[in-house]
Length: 222
Image (cartoon, rainbow, N blue to C red):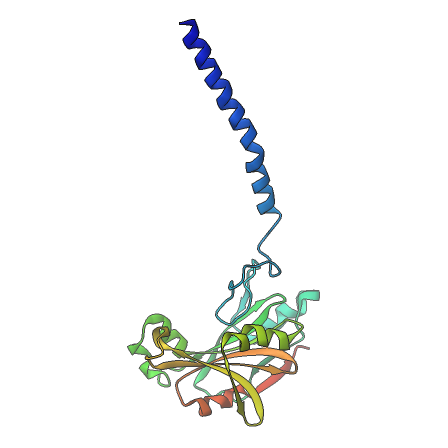
């Protein structure tokens, strides 16, 4: 009986010793995780959104009117933008739906296409229909627009084109991400005043006709 008791005591001591020796490794791992937050400088490669920009932990601000967006920018001090870009030649078929801003990352304007203009959207999946019914104009806030254009678009396979004497980089978005399916959007990226602009032009007309919306107007926030 005494031998059994001693054996049990030894097992218990060994168990406690193993547990104590392993706990610092667990704590160190937790400390390392806490010291490496997912910030733009150390995001894993490929952790990008659908427009090629790095995702951040900062929640975006959203607005449904230009007045609300501009009022916000006047109130945020060093994080404010003093200007932005919008398509110059939008027709009545396009209505502003959302303005989104991520501090130091981008300002994005989204426009809804009229149902009559995008009549064929009903034949698509919900996601593809939304893409066909949305025009996007997005300005990156990175200081080096040329490098961002190269890394996020040129190096990702966007094709260089010349249109009305200006250089753009183009990629066509297909339904269900299948090259055999119909084109639902013309994606273009280019520089405007040294800033990187990304646009999603819904394929409700030919590429040449939709490129009229790539002419931008710079708006100054007073």
